[in-house]
Image (cartoon, rainbow, N blue to C red; front, side, top):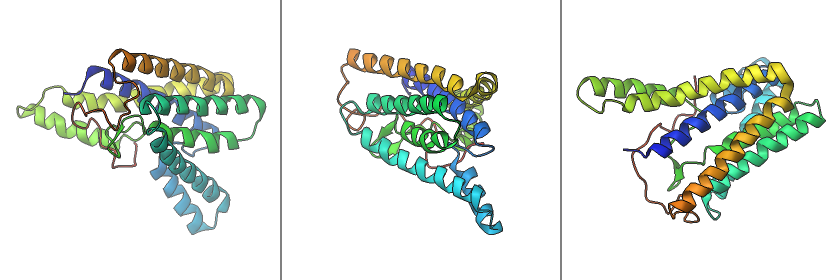
Length: 237
């Protein structure tokens, strides 16, 4: 079975991803910083109707998320990949918060938050595949339902709850993120999550040093378990 620390980290990061996606969604007026299927639909309908402003924004978000996925895969190959990926995500979110304090433009959010969300999905990258998806949850809900049936018929009794916990964490994070944005604005909403990500990065680094795997990189650490949530579905509901 998957190590408890991996499940815990995935749940916390899913909550952080939900928080950031909700902030981005509200601030950008209905566009997503991590849900690229939704943005692809926005791009398609914008092109079909000749509505170029939303199509341009949706295309920008998709492009930046893709760039983040590439950047995350590159960061995963540097030193201790997981720690570097989390540090990179923290820096990008912090930079968005800083620029949000200095400017009322939407472009820091449109450029940097999807970049950060693409990067964070490399947290559990191993052998070129992300074993746990952090920003898209349709697959997690499908797996939860399938594992629940397995449990009813004698399979693992709690595995379905692990999949469902990722979705629940993203939901909870989204509720908090949207509320924080409405309460204290963009910069005020982003600085606390930047601090949380920094603390997570430090804890992960210290834990990996304690276990003697720091610097090996996730590509070299032998996988502990099977997939928790599929990463081949780029959708979240």
